[in-house]
Length: 337
Figure (cartoon, rainbow, N blue to C red):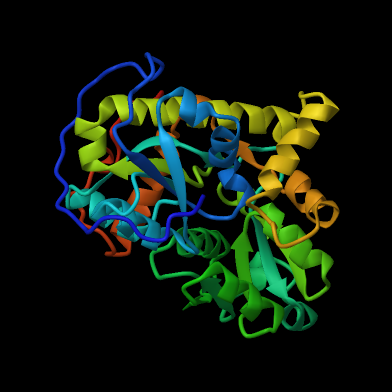
């Protein structure tokens, strides 16, 4: 069920208290709004919802869908959503510095041996010789917003290659897809369930892997308001437990491939209700199955990757130098690795 609007914005303050993640169920007083993107990487939320894992924790969940990371962070800060999974962005870090948001767990990760995010080139750029990321000097690289995770990924590649692409903010993933297919931008980087079908269309070419530059990249995190992290701890733990169950089902079926065929089919069909739902299942299935990346078990969080991202935002002057790991993250909820 989608939620179009919720309550008005409110001030958020919070501290932190320590308690184990896997304690007993929480009792929800009202609807819990979960921010999401229609990406395969958000499948743990969809699985947890469809299989009743949230209900088992006493959480009545509704989804609020977004098209980029930074608006989701704003929704958490304002109270329009309670929990979300998305990439670290300059906006999220700044909201954490203001005491509005907290990261409480890890989600999508790059992992050696598993297809991850891919660098893409438009057909026009590819035909002009852009056949590898290192050939993107002076070329346009699409991002949603300046300070988005797309910007971070492109900048790390550019630093490693010693080049200077031109970053083009286009606000929405859908707009980026259209611009790349039509040649309005030369390049982009995105998760495999989007990258592979685009490449199969012939209008776009895969020219490299993000993992070549960021092998242990913590791509997305689980976050909430600072108020929820501090004052609604039982509810936040309940959300993480249900999310972790959904992630375990997803990893077994589509990443580790240890689930039996019937379970894999069931998980894939469930995800299709939210991802590529406008396509027939048989057409959507290959993109879902072949585009799966690791979700961190039990929502563990990679501190080294988070710090690398935080330090880049500082170096670019996008966030304050005084912001620490603890400013952004409440480390008491999950295992920090």
